[in-house]
Amino acid sequence: MQYSRELDLSALLNRKSAFLFGARSTGKTSLYKNTLQPARVYDLLSAQTLKRLQQRPDLVYEECLSKGELIIVDEVQKIPNL
Image (cartoon, rainbow, N blue to C red; front, top):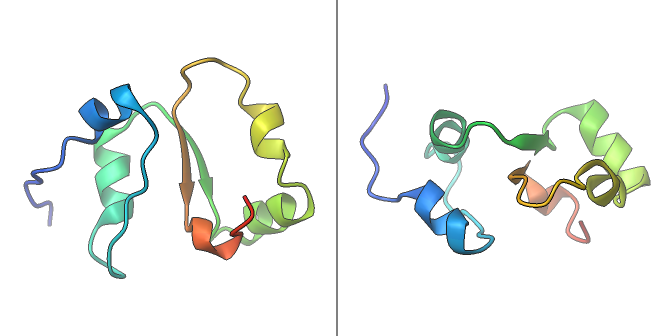
């Protein structure tokens, strides 16, 4: 079920970067998937992505060289130094 949200992520991100905090299973991932397209997404629930970025966190920088490209790191708490 999709709920109407008060937060306009697109407008917020036009100004700067942002963190989206909230309790588990409250719809944070669904919110960005439904409102922020296109974006480069690093989902750290994916074991392959997690392992790759744990070994080389600088890959995010290397892979995202386009100015203004929207980058989303889901579950960023799994790699705090990222």
